[in-house]
Length: 252
Image (tube, rainbow, N blue to C red; front, side):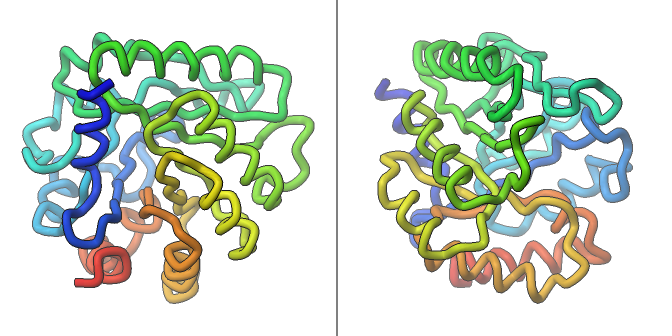
């Protein structure tokens, strides 16, 4: 347990005590989407900015680990599903914790969806991966969303609060959820969670100023940071977009 706790603590900026995570795992689920055509160039263009962790699937770790700074956490993503698959909410394990460790991972991450007919298997996968990761001294980032046939609004405050609680109950070291839009509800859920909570950026926003206001709102509600991909790498100037997010999260 000491190993994963020490590694998780290093995920947070020493002054702001917050984290910025850059997920670049979208290629498996979505294909070569705009912004991810040249992952190496993207990583190099963002390398000067205070990002605490980069999330990649194992093949891209093999190809681009050298582009991730040594003071950044290399986070290997364990689960996946493509946009072509049915049901769309299924996430299957595609990498083991042991393989991630051999690749040099400082942390592992996985995505599960609740509120559907595959929930039991995905919850079981998360519980097992937390155990495997902690046995090997690695922290685990759990990305938890309410998606499936039972779900009308995945951003419903009660569902987001429940997702946060699921991550805590299963022992995740950091929990990523979407923002529910209610600062009061989100603040209550975060306050009741023993693990840090970060918010996902979601699809690229058409109004980046509005997106930044949302980031400010979740930070004020107690979020420990952000995990933003498309709202960075799909901007016309990803480095400038990330710089503005860094200024909000870290205050510099």
